[in-house]
Image (cartoon, rainbow, N blue to C red; front, side):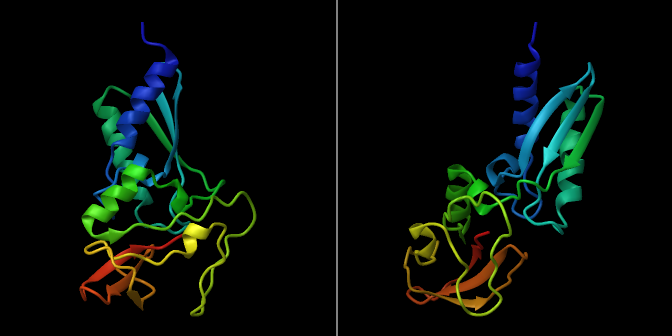
Length: 180
């Protein structure tokens, strides 16, 4: 007999294996947006997702993809809830997710140290965001050659969560997953 805990772990593994629609190199588990999976009754599952930001356009696609995967594995009723607290942070991206971003040519976000409560500081001018750790002050390294000599070209890239940068050593442009 399968215990509820073992079933929830299996269903979480399945839901977590869904690729992010905007960054398909990452799964929802690696991105850190999958918060929980709970069995409700004999044929229902509740999934909690925290979007990377409140207006994330990929949230609906994530929900539909999770519902499809869980239904393919015999779950009749899937409810996907959006949970905004605690807020998602780039610190929620797993080490494997960071490695995959780097291999895919996207500079992973620097580790800031998880904020615990209150507003997230955001700078709108050319200054850097307030951070909680020394590693966050580290330069953004080029994912192609590893050089720390990079420059910001645009605060926004193909998605709102990425900035466009260029390496001054190899001259390659690249996306940088912004810290939040």
